[in-house]
Image 1 (cartoon, rainbow, N blue to C red):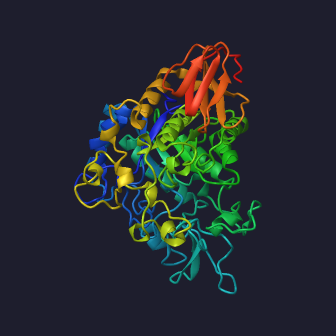
Image 2 (cartoon, rainbow, N blue to C red):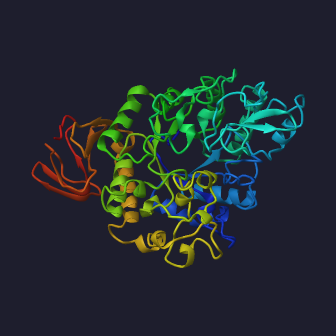
Length: 536
C-alpha cells in the first residue's frame, strides 16, 4: 500500500539504549534484532532507528562522519541487513534517521574544507569572514548555547554550527552538496529501508546574506535558561529555499515504491505553519514530526487547538504526533500532578492513538516509563552539562530499556552507559506482560483496537465543545463514527452521549448508564455514535 504511512504507528528505537548484545554497556544492532519481536507483538507498524552511523559521538551519533557506514559501536553492515530482513519478516517497516543539516567536524569533507578557501570542498560548509572588530558575522546563536559561529585558524574564517562546534552546517546553497546528500539517501533506499526520519529538516538553508535575527516577540521579563529562545530565528532556519530541496527529496523517494519521509520541524514560533507548508500536496514530505505536544501543557484546549490548527492550515498535509522522544523529558513525568502515573500513562496512550494523523511512540513509553533522575557526574549530554541544574539535558529519557527485574533490567551483562535506577527498573516488560490492565497490555490493546477501527486511522476529526478538563471528538470514516472521550484530571466528569452504541475497545474509569457517561480519574472511553451526535 503506497500510503501505509498515513495513520501508521512508528516505534522509535534509540540504539544505544535498547539492547546490548556483547556486554560493552551500549546497545547495538544485534541487540535490536533480538528484541524486534517485542515491537511486533506490541502492534506497531514501523520502527524508527536513531543514528547508528560512524561518529565521534559528541552528540551521540547526531554528528555523522560517514553517512553510508555503521559505527563499530553498533556492529557491522551485515548486522543492519539482518535486522532489516527480520523486521520485514515481522511486518515492520524500517525508518532510519538522516542528519543532513550538518556533519561531524571529523567528516573528511569538513577537514578538506577548512584547509583553504579554494579547495574542491571549500564551499561545502558555511564560512564567513569576521566583522572588522573580529566578532562573528552576525548574532545567530547555537541551540546548545553560545554563538552559532566558531573561529577556524586555518581558514581565518568563522564556520556556522547550529548545534555543537563539532557539528558544522553544510552549505545547502551549493548544488554539489545537495546532489551528494541525495546520493547518501539513495544508498539506503537501495539497501531496502522503508523511509527516513529527517533530523532538523527546517535547518537546511540559512539566509545567504547572513542577516542577524530579531528578538523573539514573545520574550518576557525573565530570560530563559538558554538564550537561543530569545531570538526569532527567521534568518538562520526555516528558509523558503528549503521547499525546493524537499521537492528533490520527494522525487528521489518516488523512484522507490512505498517509501516515506517524516521531517522533524523545530520552530516554536511557526512550527505548525511550517509543517503545513512542508507536507501540503504530494510532492514534499509525506508527513512532519511536530514538537507541539512535547511540552508540559496538559489541557484539553491545547490538544484540540494543535490538531484543529494543523488541519485548518494544511487540509492536504499530514502530521505525526508524539508525546515523548529522545530529546524531551518523558511525558509521564512532564504531566505528573494530573493523576497517578500509570493512570496518566494509559490515558495518554488512549489520546495519542486516537488523534488524527500518524503516531510515534518512544521506547519505554509503553511501560509508563518515567524520567531518570541523574547526578551531574552521570551525565553525558552536552546541553545537560552546560545548563545544569536548570536544564538537566536529555540523558534522563535515554537511560536503557528495562526488560526484566534483573541486573540492569536485562539490558546488558556489563555496565550500562547510563544507569538503570530502581524507579525505572520497577517498570519493566516482564513484570507487565500478561498482566491485565498494566500499561504495557493497555498499549497493546489500544494498538489492536486502532487497527480494528479504520475510523481511528483514516477518519476525520470533529471536536465537541466541552469544558476543561474533558477532551472529546469523533472520528468518522465510511459510515462509522466513534466518540473519543477523555478526562484529563482526577475529579469525575459526567457527559451526555445521545444514541451511543455502548463502550467499545479499551476504557479506563468509565461507567455508562443510559445516555450518561461518567469518567473517573483520568478516565477515557470510546463509543459508536450517530454521525450527528453532540456530546455535552
